[in-house]
Length: 288
Image 1: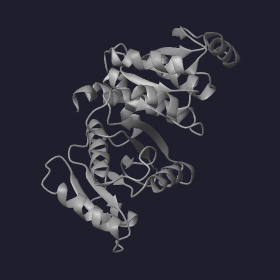
Image 2: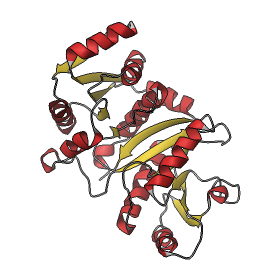
Image 3: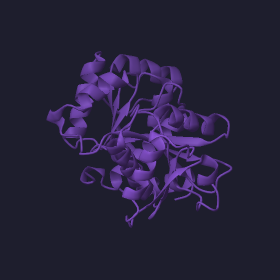
């Protein structure tokens, strides 16, 4: 899979529609993305939140809100009910709307729901950039602030899993760095050696961004950033300066989570839904 048009084509071919649990879909960008995915018969949305607000929003948009709505005015209660729906396999994907990320995730991570795996959760973004010949996966630019070695291992594992879902059988993974002799470089070298005998990916680093994207490096499929700030800046730069498109999911749990930010528009949210569907269809619950 080398483009988002291929992602759309692939996901549209799935016979079974995935149930999407959306928490507080009270903003126009989320609503547009959800309804577009429904119209294309990709998902069957279930909206958790204030029913009156969502209907008023739909009216202002000039659309019919012909979806299941679980009514509650409390974002905590909406989060709890949505998380329960994925925990019970009633829904296959969880999506954040107008609710605080911390509130939603504190409920999602409760032991009683058994939605965690042995790995940490990490943000994985997939980008289509006009100047690059294939999709590029970046992690982690949104979840793990200052990862230790074990967390970096999990970040690589989660990113490789997403790459496999995209049909990249043996993704080339670049551990980004400057090569300066410091503790971070030493950690990247250790990480690279730990993956050197894997048959499902090729991990190299630390290497610079320009080399990672070069022919000599095999045009990397996955970029692992040294820290969250670098990942966030790189991902946003690809969207705003390179006129790229992006899809973002949180991987590492038993269901994909869509935690787009307020700055993300309808297109990013829509593509994120599609990526979530693809990951869920690839059996994320068994990938523990």
